[in-house]
View (spheres, rainbow, N blue to C red):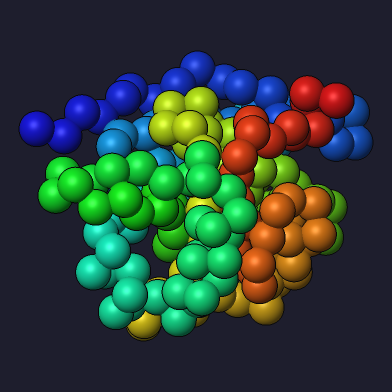
Length: 173
């Protein structure tokens, strides 16, 4: 039985142009979604899903070598699956969007970090990957800028990032 958590109350992401940017999220064992609001206006969302077994990882990820590299360096991302295999916990962003007028303001990066923060709070350490890593996924050029920025800030291999402690977002600083 899949446990789905209700949409959270507003969480502050930060302040831009004297306006609070908040988010709400929902998370289950397999999926997480985060919705971003500029004041009361919904301006974006991001969703991620959990990638499960070593079989899936070895066949379906273009970035498998990056996942293996991070798993070797950060054992906290490993867990034992139901078959007794020790595998990395991997969450893949499958969708993200933000209204055009909010591009280039670093809200997108905070959106990715906020989702990682909530996944970490519920599930502990994990490897965060872009949709481009999956066999059929793609990642926009704008999103790749965000992934490159995250890779400079977090333990990373390629554009895959290890979330080994709770990420700090703008409101936390």
